[in-house]
Image: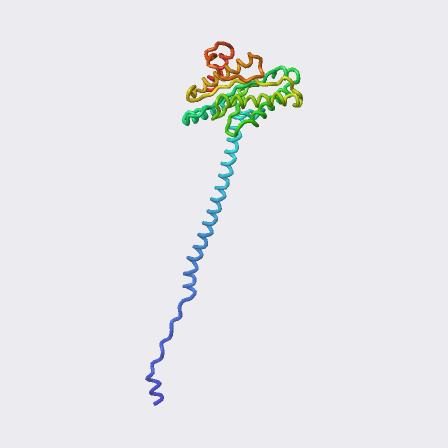
Length: 259
């Protein structure tokens, strides 16, 4: 009976072992490919970032060079005032803005009295110091958005938005007084250095033409010099059609400013 029972029990089937090495390689290969792709992607991203940084650095260098070039073109190296073309461009913008808002713009044209005598007596370095002294005083009296330009030689221009004739003349009287007061104590002393100034205003009554504004201001400057120098003269309609050297120069300068 035991033998019969044993013979009647069927043997258990043998389990089939999976082919572990084959499955492991089947999984490892995609993982390795994925890792290799990620490494290449990381290198590519790093390369792109490096190129972007280099491009940004080159762009900043170009912008710095462009800014330096603009400054050399638009800023007088001796006094730091704007050059004539730069002042003309800024004046046109200022007049356009003022006209759109119905505001006034005062233009002050001045030059240094006895500048040539100081140059001849004390030398060109003293003349340069006189120019820097005048522009330094002017800059200290002006607001941040006022314009200060050097037309050439010892001749300068100031433009201020929002000032009427009286306020503009009061401003430049302060400038003239300070220069006369400080010039004798300069290094070297510059006795006799003073300002002759002409003032004109663009507004709704007089219009906003740059050439006309300059003509009126420079005609006033010419009258200040004829009257004895070291003084401020305002625009006077009685001299609007005056013929003379000052009037001719005003027309020439006005044309230059509007080129």
